[in-house]
Image (tube, rainbow, N blue to C red):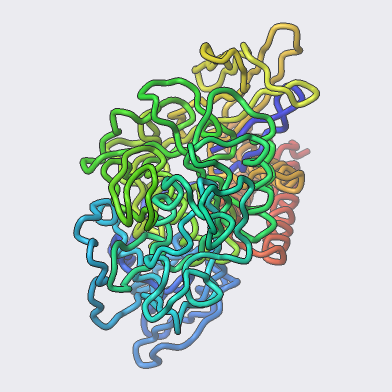
Amino acid sequence: MGSVFGRHSRSLIAFLMVSAAGPCSFAGKEYLAKAGEPVAPNQLVVGLETGASIQQIVAAVAPHAVVSLVSSVRNTYLLSLPPGIQAAVSTLLAAQPLVQFVEPNRILHATVLPPNDRMLNEEWALTTVQAAAAWSYFPDRYLTAANPGANRVKVAILDTGVDCTHPDFMNAGGSSTDSAQGGQLDWSDSRALVATTISSPACPWQDDNGHGTHTAGTIVAATNNGAGVASLGFPLQLVVYKVLDGTGNGSESNVSSAIDDAVAAGAQAISMSFDGDGYSQAVQSAIDYAWEHNVLAITAAGNTSNTNLEYPGAANHALTVAATDSTNTRASFSTYGNWVKIAAPGVNVLSTLPTYSNTFGVNYGSLNGTSMATPHVAALAGLLFMANPGLSVAAVAQRIQQTAQTPYTGWDQYIGYGVINAAAALGGILRPATQGSLGGQVLDSINQPINGALVTAGGQSFITAIDPTTGSSDGLFRIANLSPGTYPITVYASGYSTVNLQAAVVAANQGTPADRQVADRLARAGTAAIEALAACEARPTWFRPAAGAPDPQLVARHDVRAAAQAVLAQLELIGIAWPAWDAATRGEMLGELEESSRRLVDQADHFSRPAI
């Protein structure tokens, strides 16, 4: 997804990623992992023909791979790759004539029983999102108080608080919900921005409503502790921010402050199961800040059963969640519109409730709402960050969307890109990205949203509108279901100069000035390659070959075409892997691309001059 921002719409941020495709001569060599099949991340097993050199093949396809011998008698090797490029390298290896086979390094497990939580068979949502298969990607599997796991990612929840005494936030063998003592809740970072009304509370952020305890249980209820329910994100730890009072109401100022606190606490995802009427610049700025610091905000679409704008669900940079039922159909109450990004179970969702009297029930209960759908997505985001340290927030959002279960191709205003599939998201089984979207916000010179702005791209138009209920404007737009490619964008608003931009519909790392600079450099390289390939087909015959000599024009065409295709291949690799690479690898690969582009420009320039 590309995004457009600027003075009247900020600078465009999009990677120009183009690829050349052709027929594969040797089919059947690439053995892909099935959905939910656990594999070692960033590793491939490669078998070669007798006498073939792994060094030569790797140098041509994946020069940054580390090679280990598996079998000398069968000429088989293990390749360890930089993060994010496994799928692309696998395809390239399979096309090499001396490669017999290439496959992921599959993980084998001793048979493991399902968790023993008493109410597990009532949690249809966990079956729908393929939680059991997703858990296989975490080798320590179920946690105990004595062995609570290592490198646990933090997910923040902004809600009515959590019952910090609930036994289903205590892992097996433990007596505390505190993650420092083997539990599931991060007491040291949790905070109450709204005081609880619970008498003599066990923690300042103790839930006096019930809503927050329910959404928290969906994310991190202790699993395999012999009690209650299981949760999708049990390997995670939860940071609690009580921003809503006992009636379920709260202020924008507290929400925006809690988002900042969650970023400072090291949370990687933030779950927000609430909504309100009208646009909030304070909350929007906080969500932008989280995105820029690689923290993903997950928000509820709302329960209006219509297209009324709900906030922060409609916020830019938020992953907005619709609710679905057991048939993967939009729940009748779920708000829909251009801001919906993804969907998750939100009907009759069973989870924890406070162990004392509250609005919804005691101990456990089933609730409906996009509030129940949102924590499923937050849990999945946390698991992705935990399984792939260093992954960018854009890559996590893309992976959640590109692995969703969907009855159609592309995006839909009711359930976004479909219902989450945790196993596929963790297993790297990405659905081909046949369509994408352009979304963003139209702002004036002092960053105030503009209503009534006309945004046009790909033959479609979108008008940023005033909310008919509140009279507020958010300046947000979305043009959906665009095929991959480069599109001119026109932004027009009365009283402002028309802005003309260009966007590529691809996966993009967005947000900072450094990202925009990189995007510009990649776009220049892609443009040079496309223009050079066009020149190969369009130039007249300018070269005069000597008698009996090869036609130098044909030689020049071959050289330019080969150089351009090499640049395109580098762009494709960078477009896939960029979010997962560290700074050193990014710099090295970008430098190599720019050097290749410079050589291409020199060759194309020479090719364009007629011989004398």
